[in-house]
Each structure stands twice: as C-alpha cells, then as structure tokens.
View 1 (cartoon, helix red, strand yellow):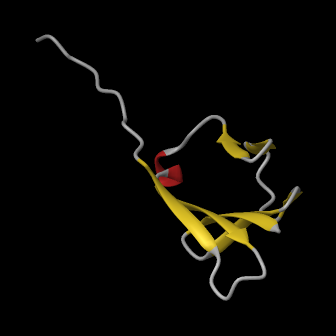
View 2: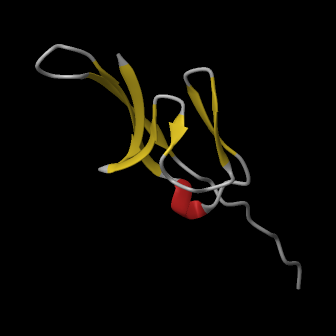
Length: 74
C-alpha cells in the first residue's frame, strides 16, 4: 500500500517521498504539515491510499486560509 497526498491533481508525496520540492511541507507519520501558510495554500488536499483494489481509497480535506485584517482610525 502507498499513501499519497495530492493538491488537486498534483502529487505532493508518495509514501515517504516528497514529490513537490517545497521546504514548508513535511510528513509527520501519515500527516501532511505545511508551515508558513500562504493564501495560495488553500484548496482541496486529497489523502489517497493506493492498494491492490481497482479504485483507491481517498478522503478530501478542504483548507481555507483566513487573512487577518487591520482597523484604521481616522
């Protein structure tokens, strides 16, 4: 069995191998951790388990990045 992390159709990790070269991403066990988030990091992340079955098992996690705001007094 191989665990894949994807964002959209782009593979980020395959097993313990990082496919995308982004130093902000790391695997912690089966978890994908992204540090120093950017607004562009938001979206659907898919955790997919490749087995001998015809179709892989997958779950989608939606990440929303909330940007802070500032209040200006005049």
